[in-house]
Image (cartoon, rainbow, N blue to C red; front, side, top):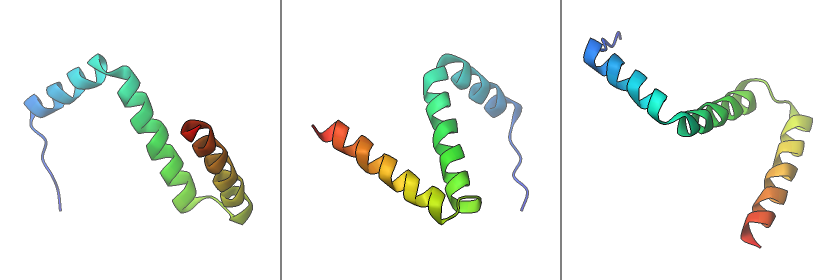
Length: 62
C-alpha cells in the first residue's frame, strides 16, 4: 500500500518540526528507544533498561 503525501502536508510537517524542535527531539528519542528494545536488545540490555526505568520512575514519584 502506497500513501501519497501532498505538498501542502509536507510543508506543514516541515513547519511544525521547525517550530517545535524539543517535541521533535523527544519523539525521536522515544522512537529510537522502541526500535532498540524491539530489534536489538538482548536480555542483559533489557535488564539494565528496566533497572534504569525503575530508578527514574522512583525519582519522579518522590
